Structure formats: structure tokens, C-alpha cells
Amino acid sequence: MSGMHEGPPIQLRLAERADAVALAEMSRDWIESGLGWTYRPERVRRLITHRETLTVVACDGGELVGFASMQFGDERGHLVLMAVTPVWRRRGVGRQLLGWLTESAQVAGMASLHLELRASNTEALAFYAALGFSATLRVSGYYQGREHAVRMVRVLRDAQPAV
Image (cartoon, rainbow, N blue to C red):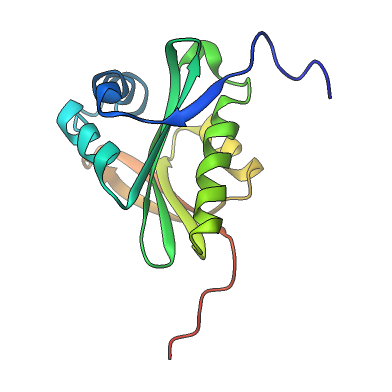
């Protein structure tokens, strides 16, 4: 499949504490825009260092062009944040980031992956649907009472029956 990548391939790596400011700014500018900034550097640093959370960054050379952070519970993975810089969108970066996290969730034995996104974000809804997520619920006023959310889920395996 030649011709899929434009330019050199993106490198993925685990986020480091030093990435926190850049990731917090990405969250402010592209995820939380218009809502108020809640994922500030210290909160993002806690995500990066928390042992049940996996944060992955996408780099073009030395430049961070995207990131994704997923929290792992007993049976469920929850995508906390994911952003790709506008110039890198629609070039497979988000798909690579989510692929790493999905594979990690499968290895960890997760039954399902969950996320919320703005109901108005039709581009992201289509992106997640293309990767096997299904909309399950619309939550009125989820974002500070100002914007509705759509919850989505992707089933990875049957949940273990309660004993």
C-alpha cells in the first residue's frame, strides 16, 4: 500500500513528564476550546505518570503532533483525551494513536473501550465509528452544562459473567 503516508512516518512513544505542558496546550486549544481549560499541565502530568493510565504521543521528528490518553479499569478502558494538530488530521495519526491504545487494552484483557465527545463534533463521531465505536447515549449538558456529549463504546470481547 504505497502512497498511504505523506512524508516521513510518524513516530509513536510513551508520553514523558516533560510533555505535559505541550499536551495540556493541545487539550486547551483543540479539545476544551470554548469550555474553559481544565486539563492544565499538572493534571496532564498526573495522567502521564498514573500507573493505570497510558498516554501516547505522536511525533514528527522532534515536534509533537498528537496524543491520546486512556485510563484502564478492571474491564473497561476509557479514552480520556485525544488530539491531533489540525495540519496532521486526516493523515492516519489519530488512527495510529488509537491503535496503540486499543492493542494495549486487548493485551490488558479489557472487555470494552469507552469515550465521550461533543455531540457537535461530527468529524470525530465519524472517525470513531469508522474504528468500530458505536454511539450509546446522548448526555445533555455534559460539558459544563453548555454542550451535549455522545458516549461511544467499542466491545473488544464478551464481559466476564459475574460469579
